[in-house]
Length: 313
Ligand code: ADP
Ligand code: TRP
Image (cartoon, rainbow, N blue to C red; front, side, top):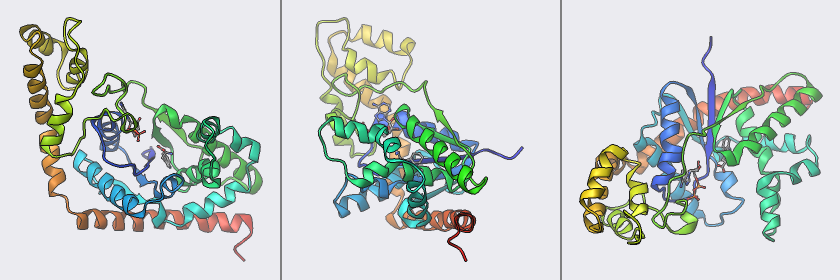
């Protein structure tokens, strides 16, 4: 049986933290260990909310470097930028012409913005059809995403079904792969780690910044142990290892934080070294190779689509 094709996309949204590592990078690296597929940097999706060209450029380079350092093998996964393969925006337009406005109005990303009183741009409104194009151009079988993206994969299936009904069988209907078992990584204040809460521990920052983030973990002396430190420490060691350490160092938060810094270093030290050795030129080369491979697949698919809809004469 042929291998199933994976497709995943991520927005280039700035410096990654260890929550992103455990929630996104690590599972993706594991999946691509025994699957082929594509990883797309969704720069045109990012444009729905980002208007700083320098930042978009830097974030794109950073995120690709981070994925490579985390262990993505570019000979197995095609890593490319959405904007490098123009078929994505072209196919998105075709899907826009097949779905209705009320259907798009039910999409969470749009609904949430409106509920918050923020005016959505038209790009955000049609965002799910660009995402459908991303997925469907490559005859994708499986889309690994977080729970928040489930609806978008449903929308992709709907776009495929609408097209197939109107113009004949063309697109495969993809399935989402929701990674449920991945727990939410807590931040330095005990809430979900998120860049929007300013409670992150960076993945690839200089040692001094990582140390500072850990020193700043909020501790309180009311309980048996500093729970916020323990919760993060648990990502690196088992309860069986941690319990004696925390019992021996009751109230010695400094020693416990130092132990956490040392355990994190064992996990991330080699990855940080790899990250530091990856150059911008190497990253650009990976993206150039990826774009070429993705374009070959996407242009073959679009040739068929153009014929079917009647724009190829
Ligand atoms: P942030 O909340 O910092 O803005 P994003 O929304 O950009 O992070 O998330 C990017 C990816 O990282 C998503 O797949 C998301 O599920 C994962 N992720 C983000 N924060 C966490 C966390 N605290 N624990 C587990 N996974 C996370
Ligand atoms: N919308 C996704 C997010 O914000 C990113 C994305 C764009 C994507 N295109 C995709 C994810 C295709 C999976 C498949 O996280």
